[in-house]
Image 1: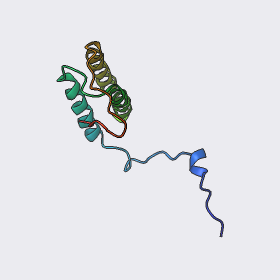
Image 2: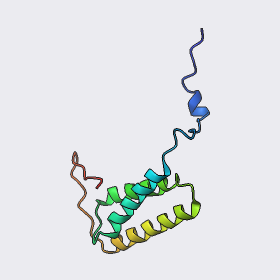
Image 3: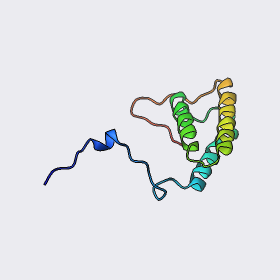
Length: 104
């Protein structure tokens, strides 16, 4: 009996089937929660590094929405709010090594 190739998946990535794909309604709810957080903020609610992570997360999560128009609209709204918050220049202090800020 031959042992399966452990690295085959790296060369031939598997596309998730419908049962494994995230629920668009759950993704949409998370995106709107993030958008509501930045809309309601008068200053950046995250540290500079966490804000960058949240922007990447938002953009990538939006990829799971089936409607391209909705996806781009939400991205544009989030980007606009992030620009507004960055213009205020007020960010939380970056956490000391070993500390972490909340995802909120």
